Image (cartoon, rainbow, N blue to C red):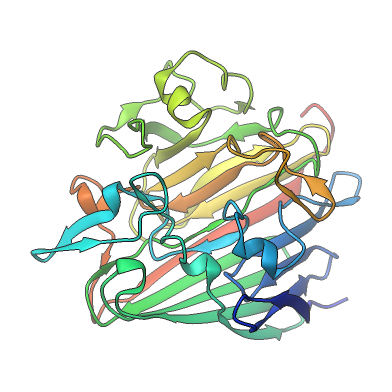
Length: 357
C-alpha cells in the first residue's frame, strides 16, 4: 500500500462557493481529513495498541458547521494565534486596531480569520507521503492587520504516522504573524480527557489576567497545578484552588518551553491515553505551547455523530506568546518585507507497548 490523497465535496459557503474535503492516507492506514475551508483538520484515524482505528480529532460534518460557532476545531489560525489585548498594537509609530471577537480582545486572527477563509488547494502524493498545500493572500487591512500577507500551509502525512504542517509567509508591510493549528484531541476517541497523561517540558508559564491576557510575568511551575514536567493526568489538579485556573475555568495557558532556541524543532508536549495506549507528541519551533483543556465545550456542540461535552477534547498549540506585539520582553513576532516566516509543527502518533506503562 502506498500513500494516497482523495477529495470529496464538503458543502457550500454562505456566498455559494464550494468547499472540498481531502483525505490523506498513509501506508499503514492512518487517515487525516483536511478541508480547504480554513485548513481545518476534521478527523484523524489512528490505531490503538491493538491496531484498532479510532477518530481522535474533534470535528464537524460539513463546511456550514465551521462557518458557525466552531470553537476553532482543527483550524489553521492566523494572522495571529491567541489573544492580543484590546485588539490593539503599535508598530513603527502607528497604532492599529484589530477585530474584537473575544470580550474586549482580539483572538485567533479575528472573527473572519484564516479559519473562515477558502484556501487554494494543491493535493499530491508519492509512495511515501500524501501532501496538501494550501495558499491564501490576506489583503492589507484584513481584520485590521497591515500589509498584504501571502501564506502557504503544507500538510504532509508520512509513513511514520506523523502529520507535519509547514508554514511560510511573506509580506509587503511589517505585520505580526503567529501561525498555528487548533486541533482538539481525544486519544480515547470518546469520553472526557481527564485521564490523559500530559507532559510539557516547561519550567515556567505566562500567568494571565481575567481576560486571559498575559501579565508579562514568567512564573515558575514548581509547586503549582501547572507543573507538567513529569507526566500526570490532566484531571489530577484541574480542580485545584488557584486563581489562574479560575480565570480559564481550567487550563487555558501558554507554557514557556525550556531551552527554546529560535528555529529549532523541539518537543512541546506529550500525551498518553492509558486505556488505548495511543500517544501523541506535539513538536514545534515556537517558544511556547498553549494548553487548553476544553473548558468551554458543552453538550450543545455536536458533530460526526458525537457530543463534544465539557472537557471532551484538549488543544496543544505550538506558538509565540500571546499578546507579544504589546510585550517587548516576549520573543518578537513581527514579519517585515524581505524576510520569510518559516515554521514547522508536527503531530507524531504512536502507541505504548502494554497497558499500565
